Image (cartoon, rainbow, N blue to C red; front, side, top):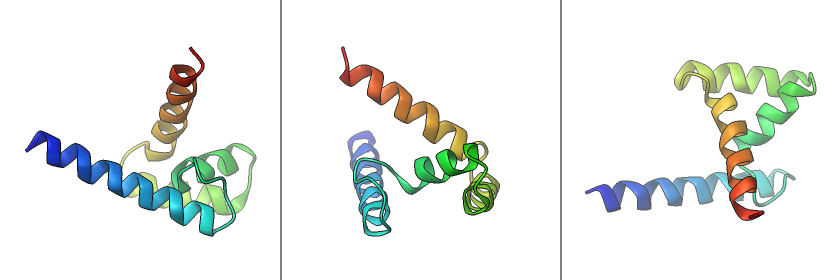
Length: 77
């Protein structure tokens, strides 16, 4: 069952990255990461989307930023 959970999570992240690319973002980033970055730059849409995502999943955008940073550190070893 654990394998299935990780598989589904991987597919959902891939779909999220595709959605971000279709919307003009980088293909290797999720919509959540893009929103968190926009929020950090003070862009209204990023603040609104992060507020919505954080209502669904506490600290979602902050987690997306930390997760991406950790991923980049692992790749650069």
